[in-house]
Image (tube, rainbow, N blue to C red; front, top):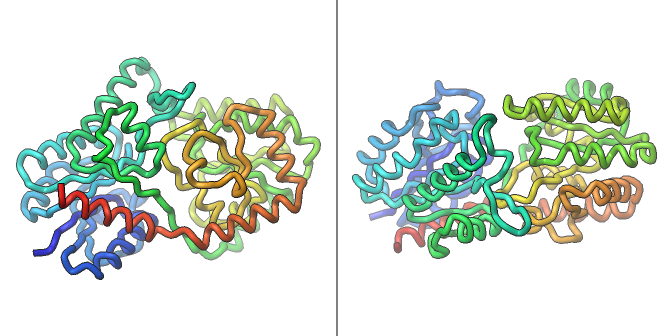
Length: 399
């Protein structure tokens, strides 16, 4: 009999690509079969990919998933369920907080083995110690209550799972040291995001060209939050903006409701430093606009608070061969060598200013890193993530 696997996730560009790679691997292994279990078609469209894939089943609803998933799994009796965990995986956070109940039901009433891809371990480092990520704290909730709850919640997920897949080795370290997860339970599968391969929309490109007025773009990309040290980047840019007047700092993305006050503070900071003509906030941007921005970017900045978790934004830079300035002591230490990007401390304005100036004015350095990025993009593939997922499946069956 073949090993039946249910892969439970949202239909996004990268999850469907990884699943397609998994299908190719499994097609060469007659003892395995795999099915993608996702949200229903009439669910929240912003969460779904338009791409249809083979071997899919749309079972659960946005915000309501436990009954449908449990009944389907109990009926079909797969050998493995591989669940992708993100805080908004199944809808609002309150819905995702019910996930331990689903895992508990599966442990008690089925023989199915549970694999959990723990995309956010929700950990960062402070003075070389793991702590619950500060920026995850919702407004008006005391810190000690929130930290205690998150630790209990993540530990519950880990305890109820047969295998945990970590995206990074930093995450593995945090799971062992902070959450006290057994090392034998953890399998590392570095998460690789695929390129979008979208054609450039000429009309949208004209819009950005008129806004940027042919200035060279220093790009901060993604959801606006304190974790990305955008306030420090603005201050660092203010120190050298007069030396590179032909450059513009573009902050691309929007803030969630929790971080609207932070976004307002950033805009005040821009005014305080008289940078209104050199700093631009795009607000929400779609996939086509994202491709255009990275096509225009001269430098991309990823100055993140030290974290155990992987991030997908940097892969846009890799696929567009955009030189990066990145923060140390986190995910980027695993992704890049010291020759692939410029490394800075996340809270060090002087280092950030120096790195921006150096990369903006040194054509040889820029060309060398662009070439490194281009070569790097040819070496990476979502297939490597899928291979590690399959290795985790084989190990779990033996448990």
